[in-house]
Length: 225
Image 1 (cartoon, rainbow, N blue to C red):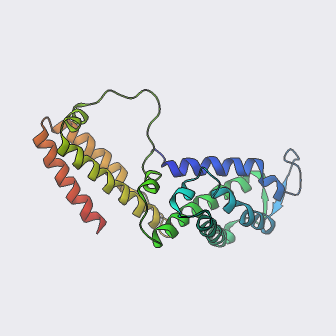
Image 2 (image 1 turned 120 degrees about the vertical axis):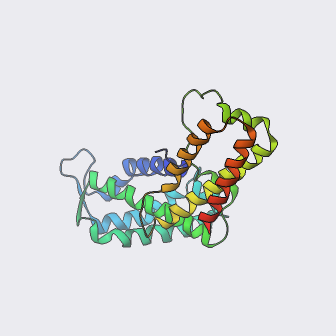
Image 3 (image 1 turned 30 degrees about the vertical axis):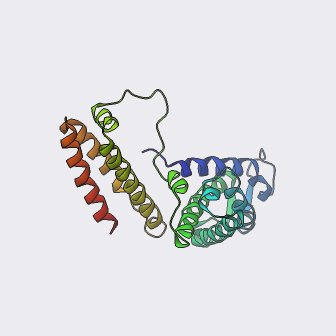
């Protein structure tokens, strides 16, 4: 499954942060065998430094908040909440591998909570929602298929395609925010891919495609209620 751009950016930032900086919380050098840290010291270090890393530009969280100070405020609260949420499961002593794994867990949790905080303060902006869409695949682009060609030639289908994509993003956002308290697989991505494959095989005319799009849009709107 393709990651969302915000998750790719977060994984990269967290990995760099943990590899280059977290050694300051360890009572040893990175190459020393048996290098460990007290979990309390590690959590203090994470609380102090991780919010700053999450809001370092370029960052999806900076783009999704109105000001740097709002990003810092939301990130600080999010990291604190996530450390408290996982505190009982974090070992009392952490080796470097465990510190890295738990750091990624806390960073992922904090990222989701930041988005939740943003939505509680108002609707997500269009630029912010771009971070939540599935990442585009890399490599040479495939030639347009029949469906894409019909959409490109029809202003009406282009409009319906844009509306459908927006609904898919909104469902992705809703699911991501629900995962904070109720982790569960996301059914919408697989269902949307299956729908796209089905119409590509079934619809050989703009009329058929328009009917399929209208029906799918009604289904997703119902799912958002």
